[in-house]
Image (tube, rainbow, N blue to C red):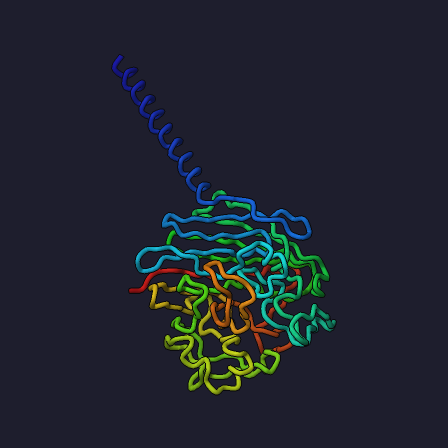
Length: 385
């Protein structure tokens, strides 16, 4: 009798504990799903219905992504008082993104980030002519590169943090590039206020690939202010000088003793107007730095003293294009009022080197069938008092 009673109590306790655990699991799953919301964003001229996905972490940081161009339309970060504000430039209306997005605000860039000289390259004995959209050169994959394409987006339901999976298949010959390229990008917002971006790609023919993300940052949260007061450090001892059309000359020049030395943190504006041939060619900084080290490592830090915001960049790429917003020209309204004027945003585009397909001394960007392209970049936000 006593044994039967004990068995009954044991079974009852097991059912209670298992039931509570099962209920908790349900709550955990629903909690994760609540960290990603979806809403209608607009309709493109081609008739594609565009959705906006909002990722939110436990701190209240938010990242907004649309399935047109894989574009980040908003990203918030805290200041020293704990106030979260949008720190990426963008258009005030969907049409700005749909109508060519001339500044590449927030977009995924492909097939080839940065410039390719004379819009052509040779691969395995064959010459390919690609879209010419930057003077004599091709820039950021051509006029209708990945920044203008409709991306399929899925919510990754079993991820530890809010994660989106974006995918796009580029047809053989698109913008002149060989091979059908299947690209997958993951956006993950972690609880330590980091946006992780992971890139993957596969091809059915030899091709070239150089993917990056083109968000413009202004850590002040006021997009009418210039970014020249932001303090920047880049972990790089060399950079790539460019010619008149911003194609690397092939030289790998030491930064020491030049305005391009950011090995020690300094204001972006400190040397930006120096009497320097390279700065004149780029109208400021628009160059690739050759990063020190290999593997996923910290490669840059940007600090805004007024708000206390600090952004640290990690990547496994060999280079980063630092662009100081020299071609922003005040044609469009900002999200905080006023216009997107000269140098009101900066980019740190992690990538392989510009024009690598035409420069054998640079790290190769060739991708062959059976190989898988991998790359990862992290933008982490914190506060420095």
